[in-house]
Length: 587
Image (cartoon, rainbow, N blue to C red; front, top):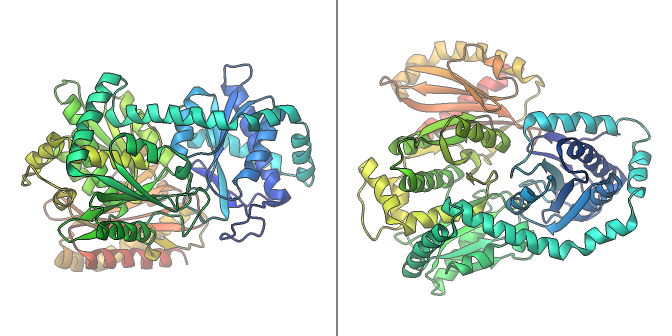
């Protein structure tokens, strides 16, 4: 039986809708997709038995709000029961919520295709560390899964596995679901308080939240959310904001009410921006922050009210991440600045804008880069903590995904509260202004903060220009060819590049997993990882980079360009140059 699945550590994904149409909102998945669900659960069941110290391991099963989720979940639940695994089923649950809840279990299976269109679905696996399995562990599951799927009798074997489940035990799992969900919400709330404040001490947490609530009341901070039918519609958002004195305005607030495309990029943030402007016209002057999560609710990019321009402004992904890094680095330094052994750092993915180095530099923080993929960045941050670094903030700037320690997954509530801390605790913004020479005013606004951020021109991850379809299957071969093309192009154009943009020399950097390698002379060594060429000016300062990597979750090749300053023409020309060179290399 063919799987037709992308089997990456970030998630196993395909179109699960029986029709094969990625925009199909039908709940039906068909026999083959159900069999794939059975086999996925079966291999994870065996994996959990090997890794758990418990005689009867406990697995949390949950799903985002896609219509195909319940069918996949049902197949998985029956399989786990048949395999002797104890199951707690949450129903619809946001990714950060299930990962916080799973800390009390042996592992979790989360059914989601993240930002992909509604007809897609997929599966994420994790243990109790708060994140998904790393690449090496996922590879073990992948090998076992493909072996199970092999053979003409696959459908029959999958059905036999389901039929072996004890019906009473399956019923008990469903009967307990409402209570499991209540428990998950309570666990998530407790974990959020820890994450936002960086403390497990309740008195400390209360002091920080009291400071924020006082400022929120004075500043009149409210939050607008376009849930777009995501799993966050059944999470803690409305309650948590209300408890902290924040008025919450939501649209498309019913789980499964997927009103438009799922990816939370600029083209889909227009709905929350329009709602913010409508509320402002109605006199709701507290509607100053907004967000839209993706379907699993781990990602949410930001909209804010610009009181000077009197309009809602949609932040780009790299801007959202930069703002979060500024907020959490300043907060971490505020809490720990007096400690002699305090070494602040940020972990990011390879295509994150170089503006992060500028922000980190203001707080004397190190920056470490890993390959694209949330698991890679999470593991990179963990490795650096072992080395003694304080890595409070990390994530993938290229998609705006902010991860705040001790969480190991993106969470829009953490992103919003990072901004709220920056607005509420004046010492944070003041320290940034002192370090950068920016003007500090006691009555500063988010618009004021935004104007102090380093200015870069960066390709958006969801732009059509950022996606290529490459025929060469072996990316090592492609990159070796690209190196030959680039060497010839550089020899021909280096004088013009210097004259026009001040580019004097370049450096090749590659990322594989958690490792970044600089001054690379053989481009092919990046394999399926990220490859970046950084351009430097005459003062040995990086002025731009071009980057490439084949997607691990979609059949596409991603490219981008990052340029220091407001220079869209330079970004456009360098990206087009990269596109042309790759097309030549692909022939």
